[in-house]
Amino acid sequence: MKIAVTTPRGNVGRHLTRMLVQADVRPILLTRHPENIPAAVAEHVDLVAMDSREPSQVVSATAGVDAVYWVDPPAESSDPLADYRRATESVVAAVEANRIGRVVFQSSVGAEKRHGAGEIDGLAETEVALDDCGADVTHLRCGYFFTNLLFETESLKAGLLRTVLPLDAPMSWVAPRDIAEVAALALLSGEWSGRRIQAVHGPEDLTWAQVAKILTEELGREVRVERIADERMREQYLRMGMPPAMADAVLGMSTGLRDGFVPEQDRSMVTTTPTPLRSWIREELVPLF
Image (tube, rainbow, N blue to C red; front, side):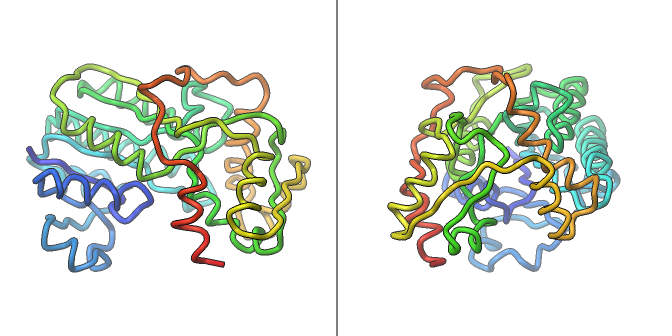
């Protein structure tokens, strides 16, 4: 079975690659920079240079592939949804041209809204397009990545996190390694077909207040969390250098899931994964302090 993996050095992809190799699969890693794949990994995989937003490159790179783990790359331009649209066109072109039978797509909680969730709307477009292209497809509706806290390292060192979300509203938090495990099982299993939605919720829902408490205890320093106005957060993104449309898209991922949003899938044994936030902080975040 030939399995292709996009963004193999990403938060999920690096774990998925290792899991597939350990399952005696030689995955095909699709990446813009194959030279950045560590030598210890490269000897167990096949490397193909490819830009996920170039349909002709994706079609060529996936010739003969039976299954693909597809990740829309992060938006890079002043028109983020257009970036997602180009990635969607690429994966659909590859599936149709190469008759790829199985796709596992890294989506997000909130994609079920289809519109009104900022950058997540781009993932929703990919879901819809994959549903229409004839392959068996599993959409992984992932919760909030633990690794998003890595972008807040400087704020954490200053003892303050800011969010536009209510501090007492629980949401799903998940370890990327656990997403990779769910993805690996979906890619390797022959027991499903058609269209599947697989939420990946992490071990428990957490409020921002609970996250701040856990960070305080594990980092050994006080971390407070403050709710700020939407416009203030947008101004913060603009000061970071984001184009206005990008700032709106990033902000929309929070505001779009804030007021009355209910995920399509309830938490269950199927959607719950094992790694607690505390463990991830000890392994990934504490060494940075």
